[in-house]
Amino acid sequence: MIPRVLTVAGSDSGGGAGIQADLKTMLALGVHGMSVITAVTAQNSLGVQGAWELPVGAVRAQYRSVVDDIGVQAVKTGMLASAELVEAVAELISGTDAPAVVDPVGVSKHGDPLLAASALDSVRTRLLPAATVATPNLDEVARLTGVRVESEDDLRRAAQAVLEHGPRWVLIKGGHLPGDAVDLLTDGRDEYLMRAPRHDNRHTHGTGCTLASAIASGLAKGLAVPEAVTQAKAYVTGAIGAGFALGAGIGPVDHGWRFRD
Image 1 (cartoon, rainbow, N blue to C red):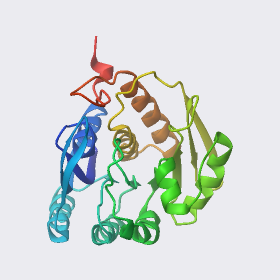
Image 2 (cartoon, rainbow, N blue to C red):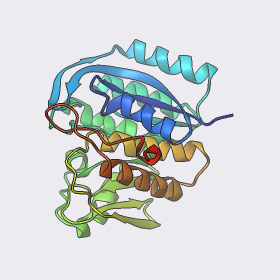
Image 3 (cartoon, one colour):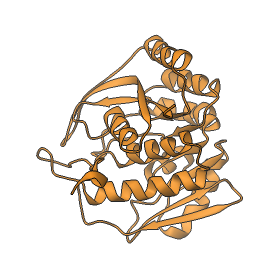
Image 4 (cartoon, rainbow, N blue to C red):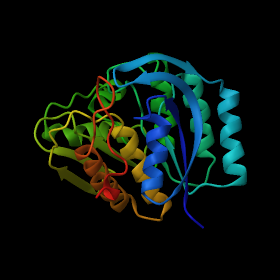
């Protein structure tokens, strides 16, 4: 049976990030993608014009409907706007026998807030402990731990600070640093420094969602965490290189880049 991956995240009406990016990534990587929508956004290449959180009951019902009938080999979480949603989703994934990739989304590519400040403690104490892999970027690391990464040398300190909150593995995404795109994957014992050339392309909407979904797709196929992350990094690097203009602002990465002539 084809591996099945469930994304629990918000909807991006512009199709660049959120569940739309997740499902495109899953299709490109040969797994069956399913979704639990946690919020609806009015969003385009210029930013987020509005966001409406779904009730916890609706999120629980979607999750149980999929998991109890179809089953999952991996779960990926994205936008969880409130403490109530964070805690409900943490409980759901903790009770599911499948690896979970937690992307602790805090703000959009354009700087629009997607996670209430009041939910940060729930992310630290409930969601991160349920994660097989947590994938914070540098801004999210700072919000969650207070550690500010100024250079590649700070990545290990940031990773240790996140690991203290309980995920089995953490991938610190160093894409906001100058130079090559360098990420650090570690479980506190083994470390993998993953480096890729930086593409001169501003159309990068959806990179975080795409990377986390690609990792979840690899885990659903039975890959070990380091191999799943390595393959996901290669996929998102190609997608960034092929990112394209859409609308008047920041365009999306290209999820189908490997299929272009």
